[in-house]
Image (cartoon, rainbow, N blue to C red; front, top):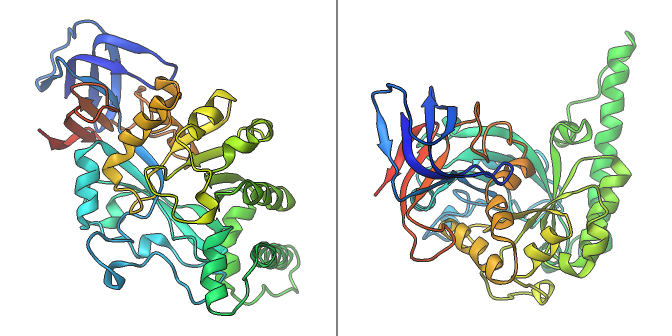
Length: 387
């Protein structure tokens, strides 16, 4: 396929082609050009009047494990029986037939990062999926992609209600440290058994096994942290154990923006913001936060936290950030290339570049505007939604 007569925003270096073409071969972007396409490809898609951008990416949500229209029956978000559950995997709970996937596709969201909820300080493994498909293993881009940790009110509420540890922020941090220390010792014992012939490997520990990719920096630690003090705790723990870090939610990030800007460009997923301030740690929630962080040089993504906000409102959330002062191109990057980097798949998606997957969205106007229509959505070069 060749998409012709398109206005193209590549999202890589701010390049905008006013009228150009995109050649797609074997599901990949083979060529991006300015002007009239001169080749002889048989299948042409005329995108006159349309803006073409990369497929939109949500770097933090619970689509398919917190299902639409269901209560307990479709809620597999949190395993609230143990504060430390690194061995559980979000991929084992995702229902790809949930209507939320179809709704996401229709609005241009092509990739989602799906994780366990934030009831447990050590919550479990995250996976990255395309939104098209019915067989989950064929939708996976990366699994595991991260390990979810949680600080603040959510673990406090769950375990205080049970009258169990952790009921304070101190105890939440201690649960995380203890599990990471155990995993580190397990890692050392495994290495010792490889180095010394007469040393047996440690007894299998699924929790520690799940944390090895974090300690080896193969995947990052995604820390749920709304309040400024919790954000600082996440950074402190990541430094203690020398693990890669992303910050999830960052509701009060604008209150400590000068310090966050110094932290080696830690990826930050801001949101969900299209909600009521339903708990104390959201009292400083603001649409200005992503723009303030981006202007300071921070690496910002915008998220829905679906089902907190329906997946299809991701572009609207970016638009609301623009209305509150965020640069429009920074906002587009916050739902394309930045989340791709955030979740570790920027080599495949997030920008319109030769060699990347042909995940594309065609709109008849600015994607942030409520009245804009999504005309077509492509994943791996195939049209998966069209109007």
